Image 1 (spheres, helix red, strand yellow):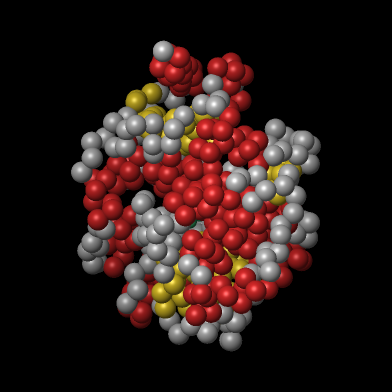
Image 2 (cartoon, rainbow, N blue to C red; image 1 turned 180 degrees about the horizontal axis):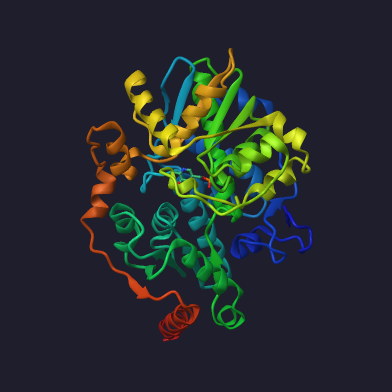
Length: 442
Ligand SMILES: *Cc1c(COP(=O)(O)O)cnc(C)c1O
């Protein structure tokens, strides 16, 4: 299968090229040339299959031509080896808990899959690749843990000094091996600007192979479609799969776009709800047809603080830019911090179910928009303990820290400190590359 750019000005790429590059040369996002429909019998038997079996079927439809079956199976089975329960919250609303992976957030799925797929391509072509990623917290931990120990790939996580929580920081500064945390004396936007500049710097790109690991990368974003099929299978087991409406807490819209791909593959989802915090760019688009990116605002659901959602281009492409067609399948919702806090409190009181601030947006959107006869599933994208202070401040009750998080807390932080000048990052990376080369050839 070939992959082409949403901007239409770059040559079609192979899967390997698209995954190693990330962004297309014309700055567009890669899309597969076709989205295959899965056979009817797959959907008939889906409730008898495991998460790994379902995921492997879906992965084969996308990647089966380029990656040998045994390799693809290994990549999928190693990625999807944790639980994703669908938990009943109210009579009509279920929570799909995507937070049982190593860093307790749904980004584990995409990061682990991408690490293994990139690892496969790198090994096959004898390359050495460097992944650069800027993080305000969650992306860094998922990417670092996903790539930990993958051969011939070095990961550099850039994060703003003093601006991520201790728990988040520990998840990517204590790993060692091929993971380096770079602590930047600046804010998140400075980190992102440094990464962008690095990708554009000719000299740096001649010396070393650089790639990104955010949700523009196909290998990070497409595997997120696996658990939509799994959600349907769980609801089918309970006889609740009719009129399925899925609510997705959204920032860059990679997660929701993966759901749209699942629907194109034949998954019987009636419609989607895009749940935003007060970063309401897509909400406004759905209401008015006008898309106006703007600076992001900080909220308590901070992994969704995005002012220019990168995967919007993919959504436009899927619907031929028709606002009318988009609105047939997606409705929008937006919530202030006060409303999110209210949702967490209410859901705990009424249903004894503790939400995190992101999942709370998904839950509130179903409460607001679910119609009679529909069954709602919201994606619970992170464990509430990742936002311990915020959640405890809302509920007044202490949250127990899960074992997986406690383990990170006992590690020792190691980071490289730099200022926010690009020259500092560049000479650091060039030095690192030099010593890697010495290791490689000696
Ligand atoms: C990244 C993230 C989101 C937003 O996902 P997108 O794919 O960027 O829309 C939502 N919740 C949590 C906890 C996240 O980490």
